[in-house]
Image 1 (cartoon, rainbow, N blue to C red):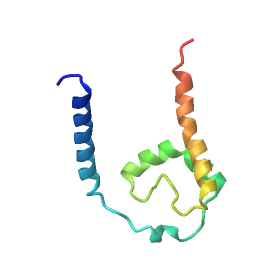
Image 2: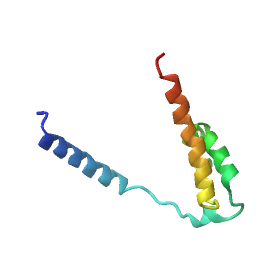
Image 3: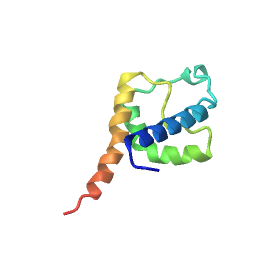
Length: 99
């Protein structure tokens, strides 16, 4: 394959088409069952963000574990989750700097 813009565009379009076809077959889950009980706020968002790596690995083996609390108070939970889970990237980036 030549290294020209047209071939790159065709490759990208083909990959996008395949991804769309694969993702369109994904199963959906009813959210209403998750919206019962305690609502989580900012500090729980921070906590859930910090434990994201552990939650992700556990969720691969246990279907009852989720990374993100669907039943939350909205923007405050999202902000806490984003701040805490984004910290993992900053920590990894600091270790890779050369002195």
